Image (cartoon, rainbow over all chains, first blue to last red; front, side):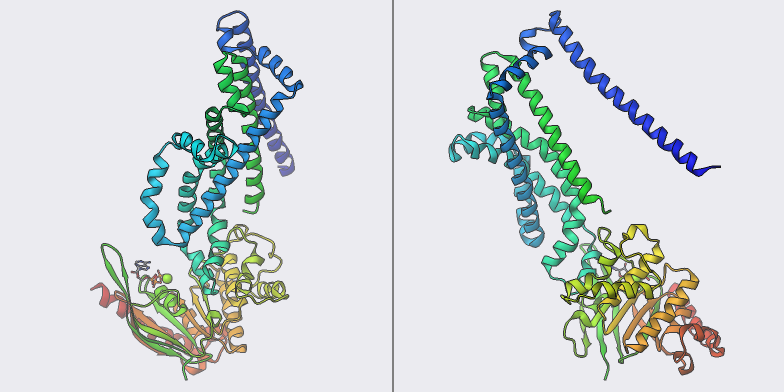
Length: 264
Length: 256
Ligand SMILES: Nc1ncnc2c1ncn2[C@@H]1O[C@H](COP(=O)(O)OP(=O)(O)OP(=O)(O)O)[C@@H](O)[C@H]1O
Ligand SMILES: [Mg+2]
């Protein structure tokens, strides 16, 4: 048997399967949009509430050309990315502190559980009063919603690292900083990446809710405003844009993942 | 003057439910340049003893005295499993000790290359541990332990994952290295032949709790030879028999 030939056949099979999957994925999105348009045109659904792809598109073109959409998108994106980074980074740092001091981590344990169970968006009004109705409150919302769960998940990964790796380092006289840097942190990278993926979604929730409350700028504001003036085209437009950018952020995290985990 | 003295060491593992006595009054000393093997049934406390000697575990009672103990660079400890860091290349793994001990040595890579060559692993510096077989990983771990040039070597079954030929070769190599650099070594093994071929003395441990049952002096004519030659020496067989008998009697006394 010719192994090279078999390998080619195997690769061709993989390519074919991939094409099939792509085809059905495209089919679903195209028929969804088509059906939506059709249903709206023929009044199977109320076009005032459910809008229509063509209307959303027209609104997009209009808002894009007068430059107003750009402003809102930029603000929300900025807040979300910052909230996401701060939340994850702070979670990792707190987890490192907990790892550093087992005593402190035992003391902090019940408080973490309570804080985690609490719906963070309920803190929104307090944040706005305390930090002012602006960007800082909104970014804080985006961060606070992911920080506790990140702390818990990453800390758990830290303490589950095989202690024998620590032993190896100790035979070389490693101090605690070196142990953290050489064993604990790299061994936990896969967990940190998966919290990143979860936090992409969470920080969008925090920021959009924050913008609902502050109601001044951003995609969250557009949704609330569209709702108040009963312009559901605007609501759907904002939703679509959120979907696109949330996906892009997720893809970026996966790119980071491939870079970091490549070596394993 | 002994380089290492294990001074009436006791160790008990405590947990909420039970206290397991792992070591009971372990007392012996090792001379500079000496090679000592520890033989004993599984679970008799050999790894515990090495951890205590390495300073990773505080004994419940007793202590370990090491002559001229400046820092832990004087002790190299190879754990029972390789524990190579999966996210580091073999080269990074082998030079890890050099890096941590701040030997700002421009030759770290050369040292790694040389050691890997010596343990029979040429040209794998850039590979990752998962790309190696169990025996290859064990040899890489040995290279990592040797890289920092420790005065005392603690080896916990370093040859267990090797095929017979590689094992014989590596025994010779390790022995030659230790002899030429006048290093002291303690080897844990299940293999009586290996213990006889490599060491000057053999400590036979009994289990539950782990205690020293008997210490054998390996006949001088065997100790002077390389491990491979020792295995073929006429007096090897007789000495093997006497160690074997003792091990057997130990098993019977504990099982009855
Ligand atoms: N971390 C631990 N906590 C509690 N008990 C332990 C711990 N480590 C070892 N023991 C117990 O101590 C005893 C000695 O264990 P040890 O690992 O030293 O044995 P060993 O002689 O190295 O065995 P093997 O030849 O199988 O490696 C065993 O009964 C084991 O169950
Ligand atoms: Mg053991």
